[in-house]
View 1 (spheres, rainbow, N blue to C red):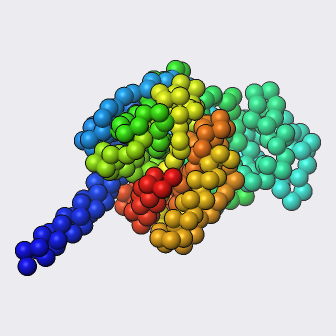
View 2: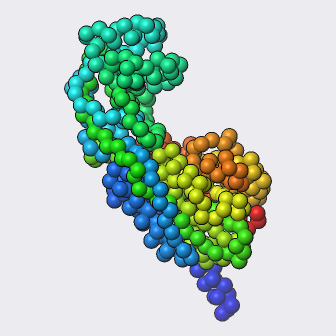
View 3: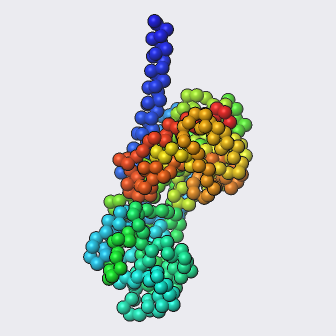
Length: 419
């Protein structure tokens, strides 16, 4: 009887440990996506505040060392006024409209000029914009249509290409702030606006948009390490902790899925391996600057703490806060063997219904390593219930989804045991 009780208590403790792990994971996601960190952007130092939070979280996880790797970036931000009206109707920032990452500040009331996409005539458009009634007009066009006539629309965005004041690119719901690269400021503002909010026949817009461009903004990657039995090579786990930051004084992009979800997984993985000492050394790198054109991971790839050739395998975890039963993956050419092992593990354990192996792209922090020949894989759970909120202010704690966390965690730890 006593032996049965001991076994029961051990099993209960194991279940409790797993539950506490998920509890800690959820807490980190909630914390990082809170108002305190302002979307983990740059205008209000949200990214660096989040980095300091992660330093403490790593130390609590029991890692052997935590260091910062400092770097700088140039970034355009929008934490001031963010107002837009169409014929006097006030639009809601982040919901009805947003701005392109390179948008300058703009203030005033302007006429609007609609592009005729059915009978497109570039010569007529440029002639019309030279007329007095369209002086300093904002040109309105469907975003996707501009791809068919890129040269013309590049002229409409340049300082001397046409006499328009700026561009309004229309978009269907949900409205997303797709990029935060913002490493420059263009001469003319480009605004994304829901199609339904500026119907053909609208006469004018009134805007008051502030931007602030930071030159050589100080950022840092947060690097935690767990020592293994061997030091001749290492595993590297990565996730980005920065996000899109602010859109005006009151709106910010919480980024619960993108990528508080992956960042929190890094901390719980570090805690796991601190308690289950690995065969090889391990690095857990939380990158800043991912949403600013992969600047943090590119900097690390140029200035590695461990020589890149010592990396046995790199696993990049980005946007796993969803519930799609199909896990999306990308690998470097050298990472294909690792993907095949992950496929075998998943087929045996059934963590996901299947794995979708996509083409390598410069879409997250694995890419600077992949193009340098490092064996790596990118894990992302996309197209589930949380995906519509991606890059919107609704990617928040309230809409957070946690279904994929434990399957991803187990897939990774199984992989490390067998690779």
